[in-house]
Image (cartoon, rainbow, N blue to C red; front, side, top):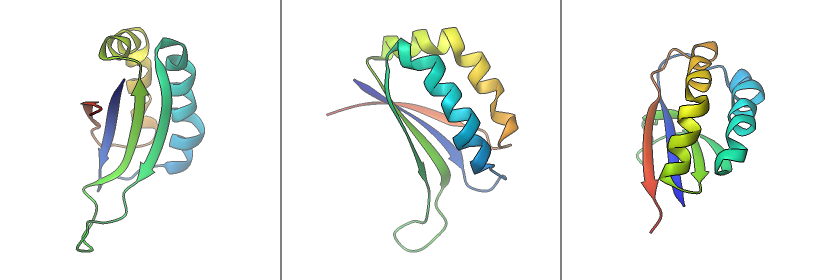
Length: 100
């Protein structure tokens, strides 16, 4: 199992309603049959000292394997990433994580 973290930096406008009602359902629909086990969204609140969170939104995508994610991204990544300008101008940062 791996966790793919898609992080949107704080600053640029972000349409939460579109993201939750349109974009994330698209992600789940396209990738659920391709190794996506779970998709959770978290909204950044602050740093421990009360400063601004470095990321305003993070999507936590649990995949069967790195290969499954690579195949899902190859099949539908262009469509999913092309939807980003519909909810933000932020440049998404993507990180692949391994569970301990």
